Amino acid sequence: MEHRARKRFGQNFLVDQGIVHAIVSAVAPYPGDAVIEIGPGLGALTRVLLADLPPESRPMHVVEIDRDLIARLHRDYTPEEITVHAGDALKFDFTQFAHEMKTAGRRVRVVGNLPYNISSPLLFHLCAAAPWVQDQHFMLQKEVVERMVATPGDSEFSRLSVMLQYRYAMEWVLDVPPESFDPAPKVDSAVVRMEPKPESELTALDEKVFAEVVAAGFSQRRKMLRNTLAKFVAETGGAEVAAKAGIELTARAEDVPVEAWVGFANEVVRGRAG
Ligand code: SAM
Image 1 (cartoon, protein in one colour):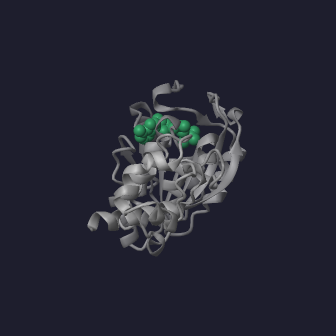
Image 2 (tube, helix red, strand yellow; image 1 turned 120 degrees about the vertical axis):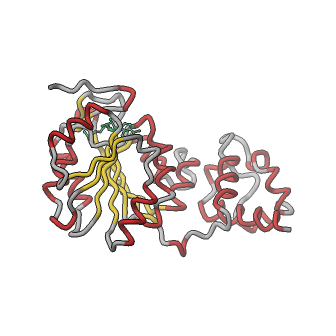
């Protein structure tokens, strides 16, 4: 039976086989890798990933929310081929999954043509699992990928850029036009590769404070940091401390590199500790 695409689940199914194969080649699963796909839908990527998957890597895992699609996945694939995790990817415990797989000596590869309506919260949700994940390949709205890989000074450099670049090395893989999907989305898309950075590079003393400072800094993009970060500057002991960490208070958030955000947040932590 034909499946009618559901807007509320961000369903735009990939139909361009060239793009499907390009994504699977970028993932290039290695024997033993644990592959987990978010939102397999009608299986465009799943089918080709499975065909490429060495026997040691089976079953591959999929997380899908749509009941009709879940029923289809159970009908079209055997349990030896895929394990279906029925439910909301935003609630799926990727940390437990990745930890379990990594402990069993397997590299965790996360893949997905993500529902665009929940892509930012999903990217943040996945951050918790990063220490046990090898890499993530995601199709996203092109504008989101632009923000993910933007550098300081770019108008796309945003809170998302800082928070994700702190945790991942990210690389643009390919552009995907709307015609590659059915139904065609109204926006352009792109595929991005995300590789978690080693723990030794994660130097924020308190990630909550780091997130808090970055959110405040970008809360009013047009304003100078003197205004948006005033409360935190007071906690560090003054503008010189901010400048030493690399933050000029006359600058705007989009001009400040990730290391400076981390350095400044660490001064706030030190200031709070007294
Ligand atoms: N992978 C398929 C493809 O490339 O053709 C489908 C991609 S479609 C853009 C997004 C998929 O994610 C759909 O199958 C949709 O039902 C599923 N989805 C949407 N929201 C979800 C959620 N919160 N948790 C899990 N899956 C979700």
